[in-house]
Length: 309
Image 1 (cartoon, rainbow, N blue to C red):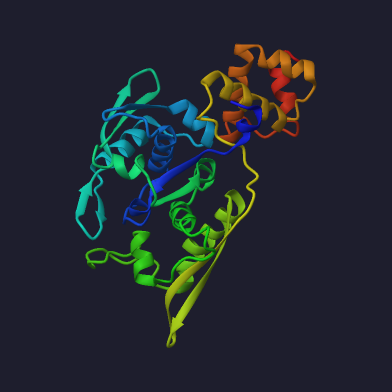
Image 2 (cartoon, helix red, strand yellow; image 1 turned 135 degrees about the vertical axis):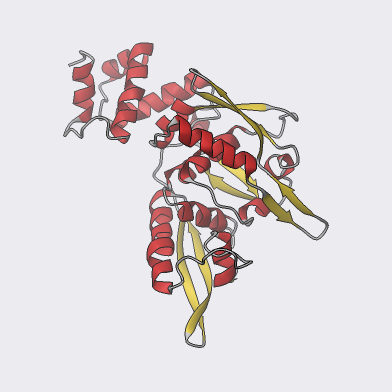
């Protein structure tokens, strides 16, 4: 792999049938799914087991999930039914066939439902691509959903016009069958708690810049569409595609830069020590999750903690 390839952000691809399917995931479920998607390859055989390392996922996302949250999330992913409809057939299918927790090892082994596999792997033309690290950095579940939707249209510049009923159904804010209570019935609430939050997060954290237009029919708003442009995201790529040691070294170097630790000999000493690299990852993780109180000079704090200053 050429050195210039190391900085290319990883894209995950998801069939449009899934992007527009009606479903709702928690943030924990989303993190598991995006971690899973990053590991898929067209060369994978049926029955391939994908290992998710919980600590790696948490260090990359800066979010902490306890055992019960992870267990509840994979249980939901096993049981939730996706409905994929086309002109030939209507398929009802779950994402996962199984989830196995290795107790005491911090790993989850995931198996994909075989009828879901073509929509995730064997993608020949009809797909949505979106950047993994962008998806990780969105905390609002509505931002994640709208980002996926907008990614379909990034080459065109604007989405199709959706009825508000259709749009809210895709975000699971309205039950098309009317069996559940509709959320955010006031347009001002929909804007404040869903649309404006999503636009702000997407524009700040991703490769897309979006805005929306609400369209009136008579005196009330009835339809919505999004305008979509691309931008260069200021993000650290998630390095799943590198060999583990190479990925860890590059990510460690980026962490040192973020701490303003740049003295060449000091950087080299840290990177050559497995113990110090592990300590660096643990330090960054604790900073992100507020387990270490903010410091005016976090890099200096790390060096002092490990006798390097």
